[in-house]
Amino acid sequence: MKVLFVAVLLVAAGCRMYGDADSARLLEDGIVQEAAALAKARDGVQVNAAVLEVLASEDEALAPFAARLTAVANDFASLVVSHQAVAEVIQEDVSVLRSNPLARWVGSDRYRSLHRTYGAMIAEKRVLMDRYEAVRADLQALAASSGQLVVREVGRYQIAPQFYHQLEYNAQRQELSDILANMGAEP
View (cartoon, rainbow, N blue to C red):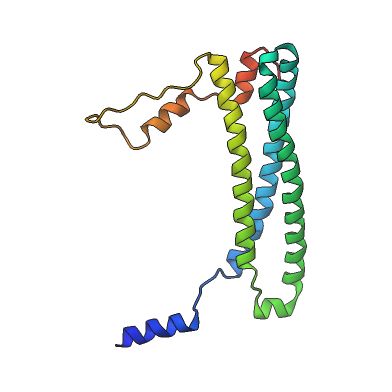
């Protein structure tokens, strides 16, 4: 009976547990670091796009890949601008909140918005990285002239470790800069 009463009381009160001040600080730092990591990734994508553009001018078969990678590089550039703007706003808010004695005493309810912002930043980066990876995989398949990487199927009575196919794929995977270097480009 007491357990039921406590459960009803918690549900009626709408008890939610959110991060404390330390969690908010970690999220603020994570957002700034994520913006910096995206800028670094953008630089690598832009270098590879420029190299692929040069190769595409010599070989028409590479033109569609160059167009796709250039589009990805442009999307990276625009996303870096928006992520850096978010990081700057958060850094300004942090300095105001940390210097405000009332905010330090009462606390601020920023954890949820910071968490959503950080999650959105990671998701947007992942989408672009997936598009970049698709171009890289297609170029690797073109360079290997095999069309696709073939992963051997495990039979019904064969036992394979849990991530065996992922390890096999990663062993065959090449970086885009290596693929472009094998095609005759110098980064």
